Picture: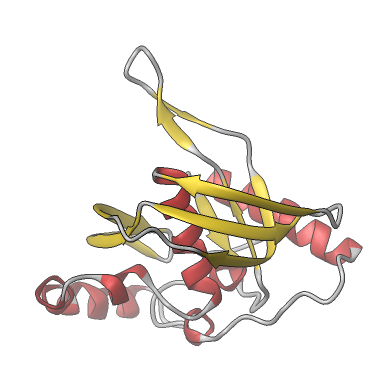
Length: 175
């Protein structure tokens, strides 16, 4: 596998990602490599900064429970220069994890619904309303493009309780 995950403490995770001006063969290859990495690391989303590219791109896939009570994953999608808008006033709190912060799950309140506009690898624009888990995944990945981590959205007491685990993570994965 070509891409390695960047872990908590790596400065790129706190940078604001740059807009992608043109969908080049290099961007297409990056997206394909990101999909491969997301699948390899068993993720449902992966943003450019998480693999060392401060670019406004992420890959994602939906997840749901089938009739037999097993989780299924949808096909990978690529979002280039996403813009999220119209968050619902109604929120939902769920445990979130992150490939860049392994084994650190925190409660994060997010809007239940969000509108998204992004470009595909073919240059087409997609606009849709997202709800539930897939909305959460897109908000989480979009946060990465703005230098925000899911732990930043945790309740203060929960965030404070993570400090020793974060220090340990930094020591295990020095940037």
